Amino acid sequence: MTENDDAQAFTALFLKFSERAERWLKKAAIVLFVLLCLFQAALRVPAVRHLLASADKLEGSPVHRTDGR
Image (cartoon, rainbow, N blue to C red; front, side, top):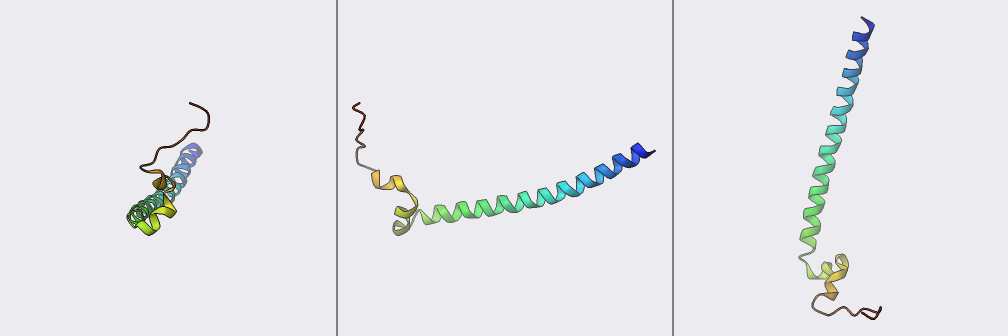
């Protein structure tokens, strides 16, 4: 009977942990999605775009290699 009690205790602890972990993961996913939307919106502002996108200044100009190829 102690094995059954141990299994029930383990199941209860696992459910408690997984509920907390699931709540944290949902919050993290929401925060990351909101940050993604904010950064995408910030990239549409030309004054902020040059601070966030380093490759934007190279757009439209050729890249010269220094290794001789």
